[in-house]
Length: 191
Image 1 (cartoon, rainbow, N blue to C red):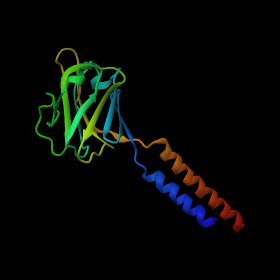
Image 2: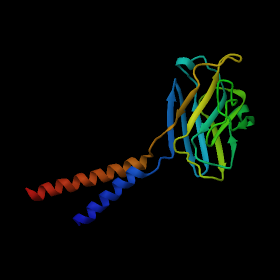
Image 3: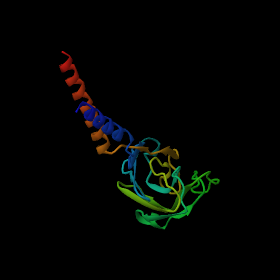
Image 4: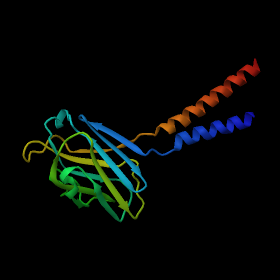
């Protein structure tokens, strides 16, 4: 029985430590970016109703780039808010002038077009084909604008850190509880 309990605890701890996350989150200057994925579909939600800091006067989004996402032969923007559904895809780097920078080393995508108003729950969905996507921690760049053509604040360029799923914590907690129970029993039998 003791050996079985030890094996069960080890399995729970290992599973809790290595299960992959399927969502990530990043908050910067009052704007929260959340990524999630299932198979070859990446969903990016931007909650931007109340930007702060350098972005406080931002009213619209004009471009976004995702890079460090593995490889793919094709990608399509399958869902987007407002006019973003008509944005143009580019493999160039996002800079202050939109998707007009130099070529990006590796696989990435940059979408730009008519600006869309910032709001809560702006949802973009990308569907990938071919290759081997790695959507766990995409590197995100966005370009915000204020009134007219005025660019606002700094150009965000950060990775969206993965957030473990609740069942990951549950398995890790279960393994730790089982180890604690076993240690307590061992201590009681030695006394």
